[in-house]
Length: 360
Image 1 (tube, helix red, strand yellow):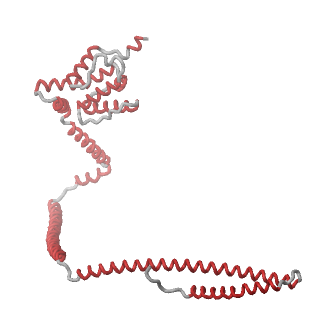
Image 2 (cartoon, rainbow, N blue to C red; image 1 turned 120 degrees about the horizontal axis):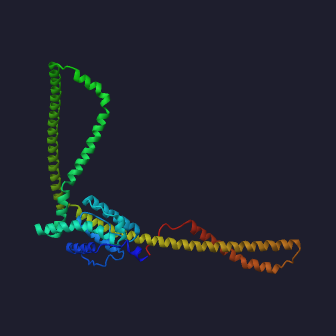
Image 3 (cartoon, helix red, strand yellow; image 1 turned 180 degrees about the vertical axis):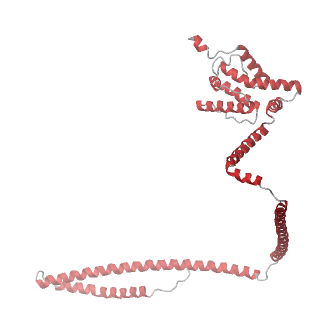
């Protein structure tokens, strides 16, 4: 069981030593020991791989998110594809995902290329690492990558066009065979060429005429623009002169405006007083009307009571108390008369409402 568990992580001591020395020479910022790959460590493998890819070509953009399994697979696929396109270096995703001794072999493929370029640049020029590695690797192998891609696209395009033309070959075979077999006369050719030349000369004359018209139109538009500019300058000068001059009637206007403000304040005060007095008058009329209605109700109740008493007397159900009736008539008589006079005065005031009120 121990052998089966140790077999997938088995790696060469020499490979691990070479990887650590190359990373140290290339300037890897973290310390990588001999025991780093004894157990699977995907974070370390991903960090080293990302650093090597960016070191190889700084224009490569790879998302370094490795939180989930899907993110790790995407990261490995992106780095492997980038190295395949940029450096023709094939990486095994299975070994890299294992993050054990087999991942060291895959990392060595990239680190060895960078290390060889670093050593060649160090012996030849002594430039900085960041400037030497892309030049030594990219320029040596892929200087004409863009031109190669352009040529490949052109080959595909012209091949497709040639295929279309060859497909039309059976249809046009008789036409071009007849054209080749026909003997052309020199006079006919000259006549046709002369006709084509005349047509081209006519087109040239038409284009020259159009250009002349365009020149005339341009000159006319420039003249209009200059005229508008002069008018604009004249109007701006007039505006500035009018803004600096104070009109003669402005003083009177300001004085009348101040007087109008004062009269408007007086008008507002009188209007408020009028509204207040009218509201008080309405309240007084409402009170008087309520008193009248109460008095009328009282009178109706008394009349109803008197009619009931009369009906009982007429029916013989009750004795007539003449003394009480006389006293009631004597007591109510002047009061009813005074109430009638008061009702008449209130009704007259309600009909004839005053038209205005003084200031409060």
